[in-house]
Structures are given as C-alpha cells and as structure tokens.
Length: 85
Figure 1: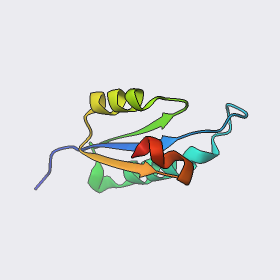
Figure 2: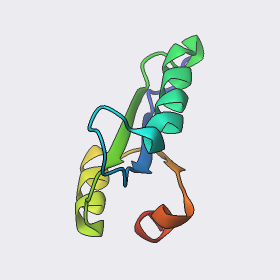
Figure 3: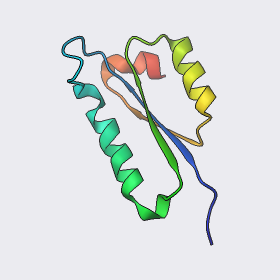
Figure 4: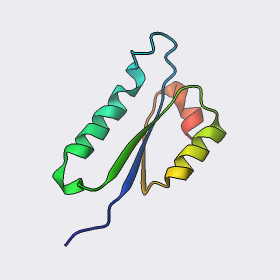
C-alpha cells in the first residue's frame, strides 16, 4: 500500500560571512536531505533545505509557509535557536 507524497522542509541558519562557496553550518542539513532522497521508501517525497542567510523571521515564515511542509526539521546551533524558534 502506498502513501501520499510528503513535503519535508529542513531549516538551517547560515551565519557564515566568509567565502560564499564555504557553508559549514548547512552541511548537516544537506546530509540529511541526501539521505532522505536516497531512501527508496521515500520516493516521490519533496525534501527542500531552506538555508537562511540574513533572513528575517518574517522571511522565514513566509518562505516555509509558502512551501507548506508536512514535516519540518531544523539544524540548529545555539546562535540560530532564536530565529528558528
């Protein structure tokens, strides 16, 4: 029996102000995304990483609400908790 496809949002706040190509704070979020997308049981699910760089709380709410996820996961550090909560 199949289940309906799910929409999964993985949120991470990237506060890195250095090289644009290096994004160390989002690495774990992308690893989780890759693992979910590689699982054949989750075929058809949409897994999106929302990587906010200097987003306001209103921007976070707007973008995540627009995606309308069924599941939300967060890759959090102590400094990102105020934004994610």
